[in-house]
Length: 147
Image 1: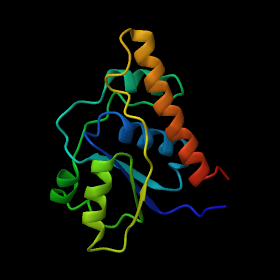
Image 2: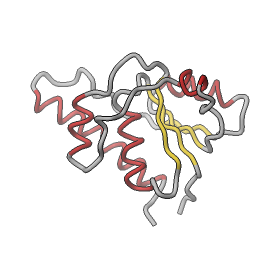
Image 3: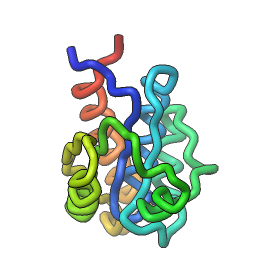
């Protein structure tokens, strides 16, 4: 069984869909044991309404989440000290590896579906977001099994 790190940063492109989902799910499963945050390569979007909706279905609250970038974390002095950065997109992987060059942080890449733009109807879009949510849940449970 994998040992839990003391701190995890989930990172994606905009901190609006995948990384907030991962942060919320990880906090629900392990938030009393692990310090968890999320960030984007950029923070130029608000948290996505479909992400809020599909996470609410499983009891994860995202509506108060405010997008932040890796640069925002760095400016606040919060970019250092994570045991693990989980990159959920190729751009996030590049940014995480660049930052990890100067520290002992471990970086993992979990390629997770970007559901934005998939589907034409509300139901189709919700289905895509649920798929992403469920991929994240499966990855978290596999990497950090509940005790």
